[in-house]
Length: 387
Image 1 (tube, rainbow, N blue to C red):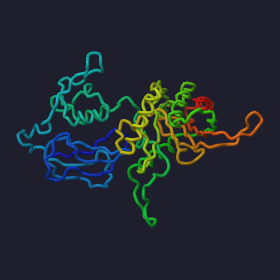
Image 2: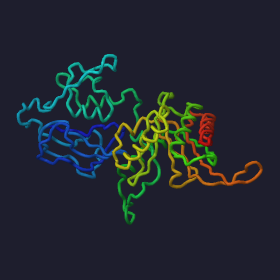
Image 3: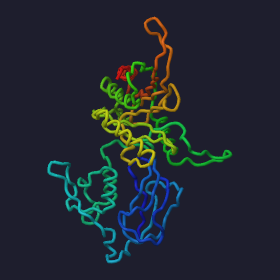
Image 4: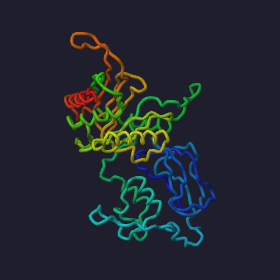
């Protein structure tokens, strides 16, 4: 009898909610076959079978919140027809080809991996050819893949990498004042907001960008992203991580931007990678792809973490100014409020101009007020360009 425990799916949370089982007791399953759908912080993830064998017990039911490392399913892995019991777990071992000469080091000398490990490595963006297998004869296992998930990155507390605030749209509330546990996105929001409250010394500076001179209808999100790139070039200190335990910061030479997307199920915050190197068209395509994936609840785990800067365009709903919440280890988030016409003084007369209110929150432990103001000034300067 073999018990499979819920693995850390790479999002930093300590739990997942069972949505639906795809197998039942008595089913014969094969390695890499989808077993169960679980909801983590912001995505629905299918967990593949790590073994071939017969399901003998399901240790959770739909709606249960299961901690990472808790028993999930039990197998009789020694009943595979045509296989010896002691090799059942390796029934479908596949070859792993080494990386080309000059590529990242190949730690897998024998080139064998369980398909579930291969599938998980692909899902979590882990180079499987760089792993050393801990299984029999150097076989790469699920644990080997999970151990290889971004080992150089700072370890985060539960909820890191999933910023969010506000109420989810379209989600029913408890009736008649009945208590209900927070689940899914709301539970993730509670984790990340608690983390921010306990770890960030937050401060916010606000100002307006006069966008009346825009000569054509612009995509606000793309203009905001371009302006944030300009802000970073003027003041790199806000595109960083802060490590409180070592009183150190890490500045980045690229921007991985977390963007808040409102969906009927709640707020999802995927990450657009390397926005500073993308063309206008590439930014638009990446943004549309993430919006579609967010509404379909198909954001992969690797696209929900390791952001270096954050953006919330809450003005598409309502609100002028706000106090956006910084989620560590990032140090800054820009919020954009609702664009509207204001009465402004221009050349001695009063005129109506369209203005975009901006709220920049930052972690005052490692970002100075001057740095934040210089960053915001550069953002405003770019937004106020006609095109």
